[in-house]
Length: 580
Image 1 (spheres, rainbow, N blue to C red):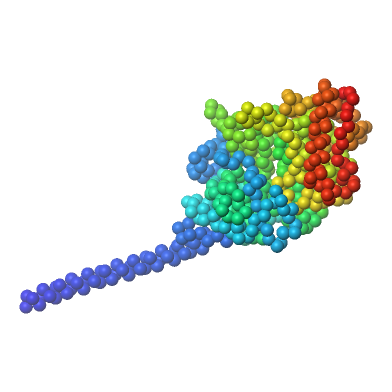
Image 2: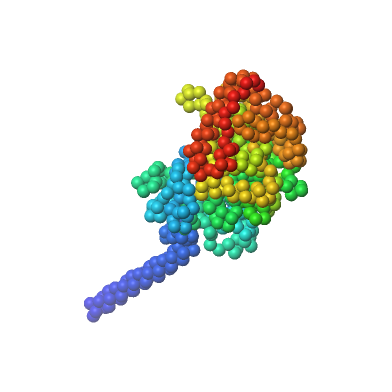
C-alpha cells in the first residue's frame, strides 16, 4: 500500500517535471521563432540599396539634419571638435587631398568608346570592381553605425540626379549634405531609389592584389551600375568630385557642357563663368557682394543657360581673410565643415594661417550661408567667360581678351603654375600645371570634345572670353615676387562686368598673341603689360623662353596630332624683348 502510494507520488512528480520541461522547450521555440522573424524583417527593412546587411547589422541613421550629424560626429569621432563659431572641425587623416592615381573607371560597354583612357581614366574590369565593392560593403556591414543621405545633384530639375551616400563617418554625411541639394520633405517622401550610390568605406583599405588596384586606396566609378566605391581615403572631396565626373559623362549625352567652374549673375541677368584650377580664385572671385552667387565649383551649360550641380561651396581655407573674403569667412559657422583646419587653443577659433596639419585646408558650407546666393541656382547664358590662372612665372598679363581660337587653346591647355613646398632642404621652384579644361582629373572624354562644346556655345551666345592672371607680377614666385593684389583682380573683373574693359584700346603681347588693354580703371598701368613690371630684361627673357617651351612641349604631346591649323596658330612663340 505504502509502495503504491510512493510510486504514484513519484510518477506525479515525474509527470509534472516532464510537463515543465516540455513547456520550457515550447516557450524557447516560440521565443526563437519570434526572434527569427524580428531579425528577418529588420534585415529587410535595413537593407541599403543593393547591399543586404547581416542579421545583426549596423544602426542606420538616415537623412539626419545638420544638428544631429554634428552631435553624432562629436560622439563617434575622437578628433572632431566644434570651433567657437560652430563649424565642425574634422580630420581626414592620411589623405588630405584627392588620390588621382588611384581613380578607376570601370570598363563597360556603355562607356568604353566614350572614355579617354589613360593616366586620368584608368581601366578597372567589372570583376575587379565587384571585389572592390565587396570589401566596401563588408566593411560597412561590420560597423556599429551607418549614416545614409538621400540628396540631389543639379538645380535644374530636368537633369538632376538622385544620389545616395552611405558612410561610416557623420562628417562625411554632413559634408555631402552641405555640398549637394537637400530634398524637401515632400521630395524625400517620394524619393524612391537612388540613381547613383556612393559607398564611402574610406576607413577600409583596398587590396592591391585585385587586378587593376595598385595601392591601399581605390576610388572606383561604375557608370553601368551607377555606383562609386571609396577605399583607403577619408578625404571628403573624393565624393563630390566623383559626382562631377559622372556629370562630365552624362551631360554630353544630352549635348550639354559640364564645367569645372564657378558662376555668378548680375542684377541685369548677365552671367559670368570662372574656370580655374584649385588656388586660382574660383570661389573667392565668384563670391561678389554686388552679384548673386550661382555656385563656386561645378556647373552645366545647357540649352537655356547654366545651373549649379551642387548645393554648397568647398573653399580653400588657408589664408582666409575676413577683410578681403568676408562672405566666405562668415559662412564658416554652425553647419559648415572645416577640414584639416587647426584650432587656436586659447580662443577655440580656426587659425586659417596654420598649415601644421596640411596646406590643403578646406571649408564646406551650404549655399544659404552666402547672403546673396541664389536659392534655385539656375541662370541664363554666360555673357563673360573667364579663364583663371595663377602664373607663378610672372610672365602672363593680369588680363587679356581672347579670340575664339585662343579661347579653345587656353581651355584645353588649362594652364596654371605654383610653387611646391620645400622638402628636405631643397629650394622651391615654380612648376607649371596643365590640366585640360581646367578640370583634367574629372574629364571622362577627350579634352578636345569639351573644347568644341565650349567653342560652339560661346559662338552661339556671343560670350566674351578673358584670361585673368591671379598669380604673380614683376618676377617669379620662387624668386621673391609678390602675388597680384586681390583688389587689382577685383577691379579688372568690375571693368569686365560694366563693359568698360571691352571698350578700351588694346595692344598685342609679342609671341603670345594676346590682346592686353592699355588702360583699366583702378589698375596701375605698369601691371597691365608684364614687361613693364619686371626690372631685369635678361631675367624676363629667360623666364619667358622657359615658359613658352613648356607650353609648346605640353601642346605637342597632348594635342598636336588632333589640332586644327587655327588651334595650332594659338600656340605661343618665344620673342625676345630688347628692353623693358
